[in-house]
Image 1 (cartoon, rainbow, N blue to C red):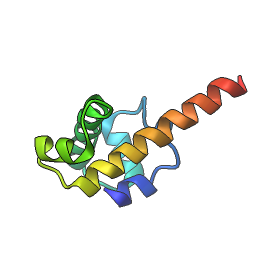
Image 2: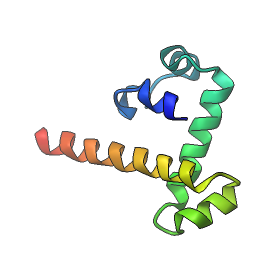
Image 3: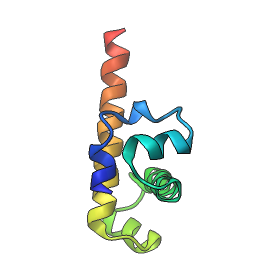
Image 4: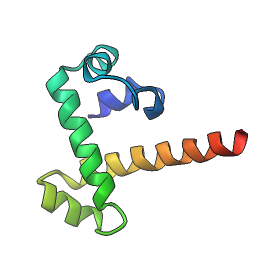
Length: 87
């Protein structure tokens, strides 16, 4: 997952891309990209309503991985806010 994150400068880069394009940019398989995106969406839905260790248990992930997704979500939201304020 960390490699996936570091292969992307900004989540907004992939927000509107098809899975094959994301896979090519990140040098991951399409199946892996689909799993990452699906997990990202699940964590995003649960974040704020549950604690990271609860999300981890519910989704059968490590708490460290959940924290990585939360960091990605926060980074994305922060950049979106900056873009909104810049315009």
